[in-house]
Image (cartoon, rainbow, N blue to C red; front, side, top):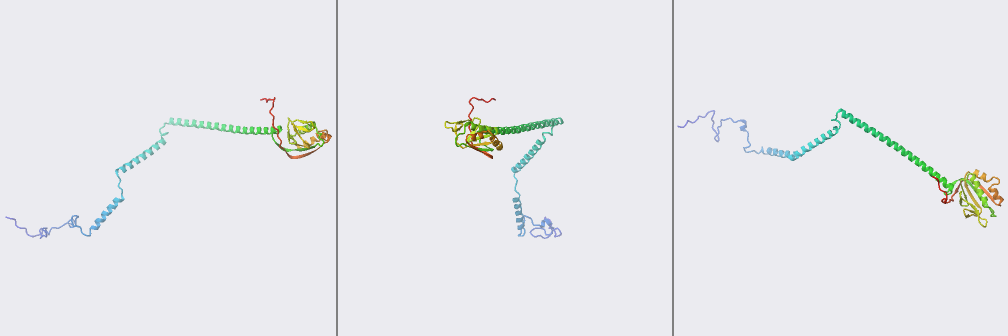
Length: 285
């Protein structure tokens, strides 16, 4: 026999599509699921979330394992380099004992003393060089002054300075070589430092003579009257020496000639004389 059909009650309700109508559904069962057919209102929200997720993935670059390894290696290398530099700056003294530090300080003191001694020696050498240069310069100046003096006295250099000019006129050509030599001798005794006669430089080796017709010769050069003398020295002293009675100019007047002496604040003797090397004399060192 088949069981009797159940009576309709609280636990059984007429159903639609085979489901009991009287069973209570939960709120979860009442919500639409993803398996249910989507409605037209839920489709735009799904598309918006997907777009945002794609945008976030695009803005955040993906870091590969290789890039991560390279970055870590660079960080380690930088740390190692900084550590090595710090240790290098402290390695010289941080690990030394007190007696070793004292020895290092002693070595530094000795090196400083040696450097000070070398500096003192260099300063002394500098001062000696400066003194030597000063002495050399003074010696060169003295040598130049001696050469200039000797050149003026020997007649190898032109001369300039105060002095006198003497004009001797000899219309009858009676002036003799001894009178001309006497005039030179008086000028030298009065302090003349340079003398010329009609363009010929008179020096210690100069000589006077006369040719067969009585013309005056100086160092073999024939001169013509009037004779022009130039002497450099104190003008007043030279003129006074030439005016003494019985002197050279008095002898010129005795021989029929005449003369004029003029003082000058500056005269110039341009005539020079080449030195002849000594034939017999030798300098003593």
